[in-house]
Image 1 (tube, rainbow, N blue to C red):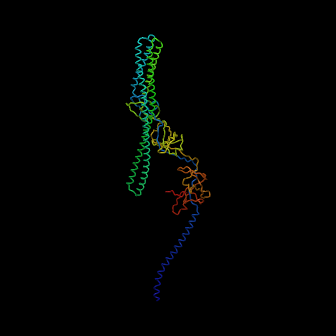
Image 2: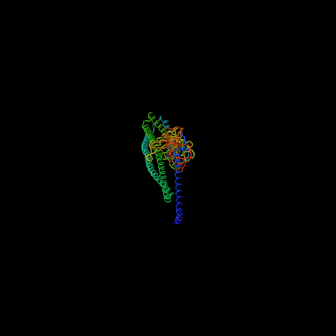
Image 3: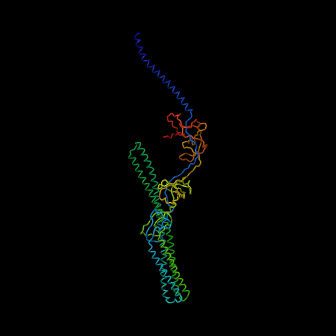
Length: 554
C-alpha cells in the first residue's frame, strides 16, 4: 500500500508544479499591468496639467488691397473712313494696313484728266463771257442793229436755260434719293449685324456652359481612370468631346468678332452715307442755284434784247446781265479748280491705316471709302466687368494694363468710360481705360489684361486666416496672454489677401495670436509659446496643428 502511494506522489507533483508556475506568472503579469496603468494615469495627469505647446505670431498693421483683373482688347477711340468728294478712277494708293500716317499725308490719288478737261471748258466759258461783256461795252452807244436776231437768239438761250433749270431740279431730287437710299441700306446692314451678334452671344453662352460641363466630366473620367474604374477610351472620348466643344466656342467667338467688325463697318458706312446726303443736298442746292442764276441771266439778256437798245437803261441791264454771266463763269471755274485739289486724298488725322478698301484702277466715289484711318495716339483697353465690380469703379481711376504681345511691360492708364447700361446677355458693364500710345506700340485688336484696385483697407490690423475661429456665429481669435494662458478675443473680419485677414476688435499690434497647437486650445488653458515635442498626442503625430483644430500639413 505504501509502495503504491509513493509511486502516485511523483505523478501528482508533476501535474501541480506547472499549475503553480502558470498561476505565479499570471499573478506577476496582473501586478505589472496594474503598475503600468498607475504610471499611465500619472503621465496623463501630468500632460493635462502641463502647458500646451503653441505657435503664435504678432498682430500686423498694414494695408490690404483688393483688386480685379479682366482680359479685354485694345481698341481705337475713333476710325475715319477716307473717301473722295468726286467720283474717279484711282491712280495709286500710297499706304497699306498698319502704316503710320500723319495729318495731311497723301494717301491716294485719283485720275485728274476729266477734272482738268472741265477746268479748260470753264476757262473757255469765262473767256467767252468776258468777250461778250467787252463787246457790249464797246457797242453800248450804237447797238441797234440786229435787235430781232438777238432777241431770237436770247429766246432760244432762255428756253435752254429753262430746260437746264428743270433738269437741275430733277437731278436734285434724284441725288438726294440715291444718297438717302445708301443711308437706309447701311442701317439695314447694322440691324442685321446686331442680330448676328446677339445670335453669336447666345451661341457663346451655350458653348461655354457645354465646355464647362465637358471639362468637369473629363476631369472626373481622368480621376476614375487613375483609380482604374473606367477604361482609357472613356477618358479619351471625354477629352475629344471637350476639344470639339472648345473649338465650337472659339468659332462662336470668332463669328461674334466678325459680326462686330461688320457692324462697325456698316456704322461707318452709314455715317459716310449720311455725310454724302448732306454733301449731295448742298451740291444739288448749288446746282439749282447756278441753274436759277443762269435762267435769270438769260431772262435778263432776253429782256435787254427786247428793250429798245437806244435806251440807256436797256444797255445797262444788258451789261449787268453779261457781268452776271462773267461772275457765274468765274464761280464755276473756281469750284472746278477746288475739285482738282480734292483728287489727292490726305489723312485727316494722325494714326494707323486700319483697312485698305480699294486697289488702284478701281472707281472711288463719295459713297465708296478708299482707306480707313484709326486714331491710336491714345487707345482704349476695353474689358467687361460684373456689376459688383463696376459699381466700385469710377472715371479717372487708375488702372494697370499688360499685354501678351509686350511681355514684361506694364502700362498705366485711367478709366475713360463706364457704360451706364449692362450687356443684356452677359449682364456685365463695358469699361474703357485710356492709354497713352504716342510711341504707337499698342495695336488695336490685341489682348490686354486690365487690373483695378476695387477696395483698400489702410492701416488695418491683420492676422493669419488660420488664427480665426468661429463658434455659434461668432468669430474670435486666441491670443497668448502675458500670464501664459490662452485668451479669447471676439473679432469681425474684413478684407483678405494671401498674407492675412483684416480684423477689428479688442486687439493691439502687441498681441500675439495662436496659429498652431498640438491639440485644440481652450480659453484660459496654460500654454507655452514656441515649438516643442514634450506633449505628444496619443496618435503619435507630434506636429503642431492650426489653432482652429485643422492640421493642414501634407
